[in-house]
Length: 247
Image (cartoon, rainbow, N blue to C red):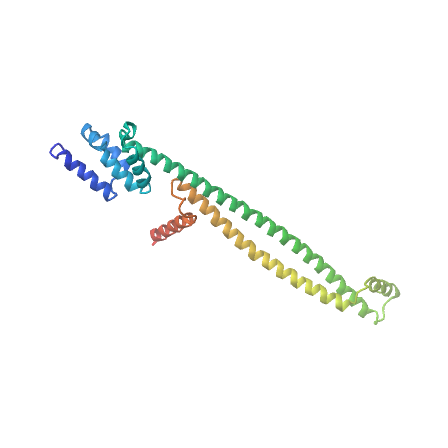
């Protein structure tokens, strides 16, 4: 190490920053290796390159402000390492807030899915109860039809009186009521089938939202501020990695 001059070490670190193989963590680790690297790693030109490489949007605003205030001693003494630390902390806070917004959005989506599932289950139970009542009434109507047919057959007077009373209590024609109840049963079955399908869809979406929330919480420092679909991309990427690892 002592054989190489300072200019060559500086050039090596510049190339590392330029090719993005040397990050701020690596530069900080080099600075604690020895006194010489500590001095070289603290070079303002290195942190200037690193600042512009990691935060390109910082170029126009910061350099313009420094050019306008270059005559003041306070602006001239500002180190790019300090500027990098300020910008890094600001960027990390923005990522934390963006991550929090994504977590809240997914949690609200999960709550909405749970509410829809409860609503579908409630409506399904109501339709099943309605269908059970229609089945019971249909059985009674069939008994009325059988009683009306039995009146034409000789039977004891006591049984004929019960059958006649059963028929008189039914004000609606038997065949018309049977057709109405059968149609109602068919509609109830269709409604229950539709609710079952919607329930499966909502449960699948709920599982996807829970998986997405777990993925987002597992990557708290991921940049979620650019697009809202990055958690899905992260989940798809993890699925691809699992798929390739099993092959």
